Structure formats: structure tokens, C-alpha cells
Length: 524
Image (tube, rainbow, N blue to C red):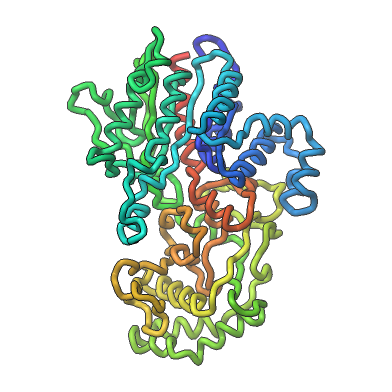
């Protein structure tokens, strides 16, 4: 680097969730070193924070010297407390790095500011990453509220989540990172506050944070240029013909090697005293499909809820479908071929060796493309966070039908495609509002977007293998989000799903880190 420093570039990660962005920056390697070092990650949710702290602990050890105790913990052989007590130095460093706090609360802001100052030690050669909570911007969230009479009085200007980006902006204004990366849902492009689009305000604020926080301006430069990661352009607002449109900031993850159609707004900001740098953009690559990354996962059966569950009861319930009216309805609606596909699946059904799975399942589960380097860890010897949820019997039948339908037609069925006896018993079943209520993740394609809704039920995330008749596990969702296999999610299964759904894909963050590293190398 120009100033001769070899110290890692400090990274502050706010609204960190379980650490997807931070993982990508931490994992990135250049000249056989890790140029970025997470100095502080901030998250308010205690379960996501627990995941962050555990991952920080893992990163305290060199790449080729991870402790066997960590894998003993993943296998359930020792407790977290025992793991940390055996490695007190690394556990203490992890506790100092991962902070459970809520940006926007005055007492928490004071703690966060003190730790930022301590972490940066006066340098302006550092990177800010993160994204404010997205619920207020979410298209899905707004659509749900519009149909909910209880939320008919909802106003986005009254939702504090609409303004949490100001906490992110305050850190930029006060501590002047060389580069920032801000992520959010694409719904923010159309979100309005008092009739005005919020995105234009956010861009304006990020370009000149001192206009919003003049108390931090002093005599220093307080301007940034905000770039797209997918479209080359001159400076935003420079009056040139290359000025970007809001949609130019949408990163369609499936185009960049992520096995899901996740579309997010990602903003790359560079401080204007470094404005002679022209950042690169993400390089498109071939699709990675859902079966590329989960086809070799240990097979599991779904559980039965609201009744006694066992492997035998589950198998009997599916076998009983041979006598159910809905199966005859398939023949009437779709003819013999799909009917026979279902019959063959039911007759050939065998119980999986790992039953419903668990927090640790022994065995090999490689990915079948060239991403094995990213996911796999030979010391793991199995799969974490891989347990199937329970479903009522009728939902098991719906999953069985839907997966067979998707295998036969190479598309997920709509509700109108279901036999009448499998339609949900509620008024919206025929309204058209929820026509994709049961969505199969189709083999041979990237999955649909993994969101936090996966924690509610599995209907949008049905496994393409009808013989398993279930929704995706936490680990399968984590693979679609590109979390490495040794990344363990804390909390119960619902809390784990929420963390995975809210995360930024770490492999995408790794590719962004490569772009940021080139920027830093050019200017320092």
C-alpha cells in the first residue's frame, strides 16, 4: 500500500444480523493474507448477537489452526461455556468485537461511539458496512399491511425503522470511513415518506452527511460519491449523461454466483478526497442452482405436527394417501402421467437414515460445483442446523403433490393447480392473492429469495425432492445464502431461520470486499 502499512483494514459492521456482510469481508484473501479485520459488529437481537460472537470466536484462530474444541461444540459434545472457558483469550476478543446494542438508543449510542473510537484509533483508513432494518421498506411488508385492516392507519413516517439509516449516516458523518457499503431491500426504491421517495433523500444524505449532521463537519471534507456495484457510471449528481437511475443500484444476486434470486439495493460510497478512484463492478457469472448446493445434503423426512410423530407414523400417513380422494382428484385434473408419478413416489418411499435430522448430522454433504472451497470444512465431518420441521398431514400431502408437480412440469404449482381436496380451508384460497401459497424451489434453477418469512412456515420453501415431503432446513437455507458449513446459527430453529433470512449472502460480500480492497490499495 502507498503509505507502507500492512495493518489490516478496520471494518465496523452495524445492523449486522448474524454477520453475512462481515463474514464476506473477513474471509476475503489477497496475497495470502486477510486485508480486512472486523473491529466491531453491532446487533440488537440477542440470538443473532450470539451467532456473531461465536463466529468472531472462530475467526480469532488462524485459518489452518482452528481448535478441535470448536467442532466438538458443533457436534454437541461440549457446551458453549465449556468451549469459551477452554479458550479464554479468544472468547474475550470475541466478546469485545461483537456488541449487543441498539443503534438509536442514546445509552447504546454512547457505548457504540466509544468502541468505534477505540477500534479506529484515529485512522480514516477504514470501512463501514451494514444496512438498517428493512421491514418498513419491504414491498411484501407494505402489501401485507394494505390487506390488513388492523394496519390501515399505518404511516411509514411514524415507523422508526424508516429512519434508522440516519444512525448509519451519523457514523459516516462523525467518523468518516474511506468506504462504506450499505445494503437494503429494493422496496426502498419505491418507498415514500409524506409523498416523497425516500431513496432520493437517502442518496442525497449519503453524499453530504454533514448537511444532516453539521456538528461533525468541522473543516474536514464531508462528501461522498455513491456508486453502483453493477453499472459503471460517472459521479452521481455530476450532471453527466451517465447519471444513474435508482434501479441501477439493484444487485440481482443470481447473476453473481449466488444460488437464489435475491435482489437487493447495495450502495458503495467513497469519500471524495479519494475521488480519483474508479471502482470496479461485480462480474457476472453462470447460474448456481439450488441442487448444486443442497442435492448432497443428508435426506430427511418431515415431522408430523398435531399428532403423534414417528418415522413409522410419517411413512404410514404418506402411504394412506393412496386411498385419499385428493389423489384421485389429481388424475381427474391432470391425467394419468402426474397421477402415476405420485403413485410411484409413494410406493417407492423409504425412510431416510437420519430421520428428521438434528443440530448436527454426521456424514459428507459436498456441493457439486466449484464452490466446495467456499462451503466445505473437512474437520466438520457432518452438517449443522439440519433438522426438519413438523407439518400437519394435509400439508405433507400438499408438499408431496407440489414437489411431484414441479418435477413433472418444471415449475411450481399455483393454488389453482391443486386438486380441490388439497386447497387450504380459508377464504383467500381462491382470491388470487396467495396463488403461490405453496412454492416449490425448482431443481435446476436458483431458489427464490430466502427471507425471514421462512421462520413462519415452510410453504414458500418446499424441497424439490417429493420423497422428503418437507420444507427446507436452516442449513439448506444457509447454503442458499452461501454461509460456510462451519457457520453455526444460535437459538432455536425459528430464531435460526430468521437470522438466515435477514442476512446478506457472505459470498456476495466476499466479492464486494474484493472491489473495496482494490479501492483501498489505490488510495493508501
